[in-house]
Length: 104
Image (cartoon, rainbow, N blue to C red; front, side, top):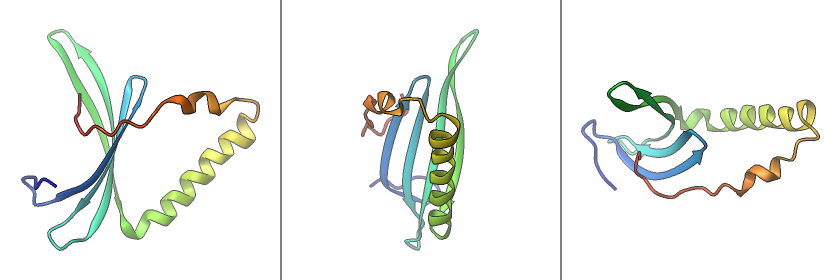
């Protein structure tokens, strides 16, 4: 566990590579041992002199976990069952979660 410059400790991290995007799920703790989750979407973008990573981050606090999971599950189920019932989502499940913690 490594302390960063803002005093927030990272407890757990998962990386999910998804095509041109990478998602990071990081559990962190404040100095008072209060836990929260950051969800980061990272996309590699190119410019004339090289590339950079465009990042979007969501902070999810413990008191909102259940509401967030319920809304996410309901939304995904709606797409799978109502909008795309004939699509084989199992073909996508072959992508494994990557346990590495780096941003590369």
